[in-house]
Image (cartoon, rainbow, N blue to C red; front, side, top):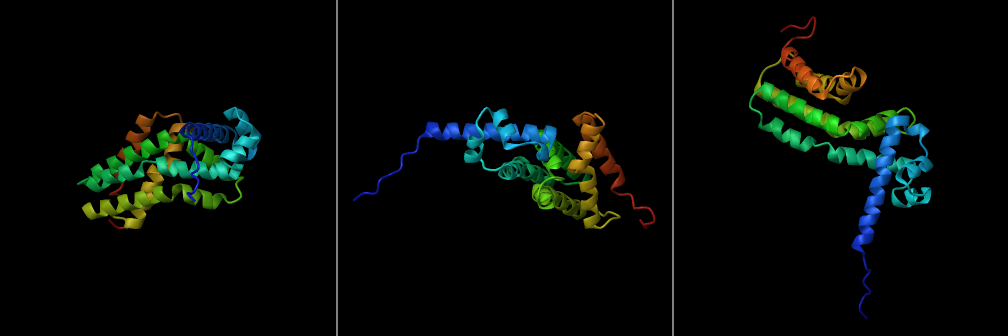
Length: 210
């Protein structure tokens, strides 16, 4: 007897995906504005114009929603495209230009998501692991940029120290400080961070021999 095939409705799948997207967008906006600990599933449901039951059925609990947001942010970060530019660069300044451009694109395009994650850390049950998962690829990309820099030129720092400096300049905290906390434009922040990196990367730390 032939096996009965389950009918899958493309229209129903599209509607489900749309509902899921609305829920995630609502959660991102609310987490970024109020903080994870001050948002309920009912709040997220109201923002998406669905019932709390639909939220649980479509995505899951509030913690599940945050995990989805983190995974989507990592996927949408564009770090792989940025790293292709880093690997293709033939001089240190070009490497730093690629890093500045790539990290700016990721931080600007995902700013609300980054805010949602950042504000979740104090109240999340496992905030340290969440931050590690959200930034692991970002850190790896900057370590790869440091390797490329040291392959192209000599610096008064170790490769690990160069990676730390790139994280200090081009990590999410640097971008947020200049854009969100001081009101700089993204263009101005990119130009400043790039110039700072180019000028100071070859400078030894205080007390360190050149």
